Image (cartoon, one colour):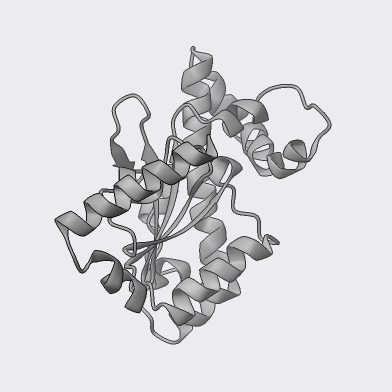
Length: 212
């Protein structure tokens, strides 16, 4: 299988060079992405593919169920590099319907590391138990929980010292929440964007509306 991987790589490389001779030399000399993407590690949701972007246009961090932990040094270091070194001003937290991590968070715990990782989603499920219970189908409840997990991730990123410093310095950074449909390949805006104004109490309607 590894030899097949190398073969596919060479085929792809040659095709890209035939389509655009300067493609790799251009990528090798600069990295200037417009977006920082926090997404799920699910192999069906590659950021640049679903967003229709080329390599070099999006800086990516992925983990199981796109959970934003306030103590995740991997995520925080990537966020800091994105904002302070790459100058990215558009941050996206993207979940997806049919998420296996969200599904696992709604089932019995197995006693592994995944249970610890998914604890914030379990907490959301408890906090929104009444609202989720109004949805008849379990898949609908899980999909709504996936949305709530994105909204919570947007909130948590906005609360980091990294974003607080950027906003205090007057940087126009925005944090958006999106959800991706595996069944139709479409990205949807959860209308929970946070800007500097909303954090400092001047404008919070979008976040409140999405969370209610």
